[in-house]
Length: 233
Image (cartoon, rainbow, N blue to C red; front, side, top):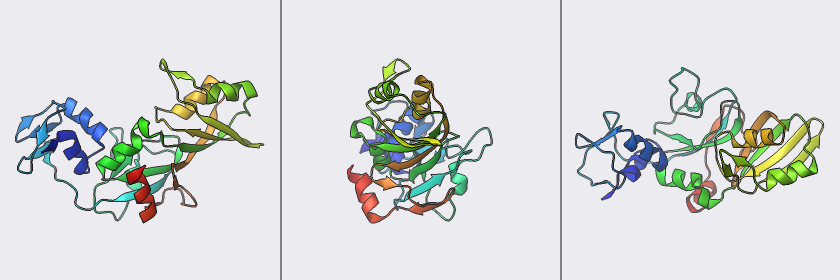
């Protein structure tokens, strides 16, 4: 027996956290009955449906890295008809989904998988996995602004964790920014709090997983060492 949200993640539908949202929204049924209880457990003989469709655990685990282009949604689908990252994933039979997200106008490294446990590990704040971005900004911050940025900024009434800001070049003004949280538009909003703006923003690494020379809109399978890292980080 295992918890319903863990089972859903093992089926490659979404991460365990997202599965909890779907359960709460009444999108999941077990043996024909809608389940909204987070502690509900299922066995191998139970029939689980998501949005009316029977779901089964994925047998082959897939781990991908994509260089997400600007101007697409980090989602499996979009009700507004916009292009999603899945439009760039071709030739993969297994159903994968994005781990975390990059906003519409941000490009760079994004991980996709059907391994719900690993996805949950990568997104949980307690693991403190560094996410590194390169930002083209309006201007180079003053020392006092760098101090303020690195020591925590209040967003939505909650202070951000310590971050790091480094100057890459003064012309054009470019910064390397390291955070280990994943709040909505966090880097852009933190820059706005010091009266600056990200003209362009690209994520170049998540922990030990690096974007490298992967071209925009292209994806690759993770190496064995990368898979070992994300499973044990």
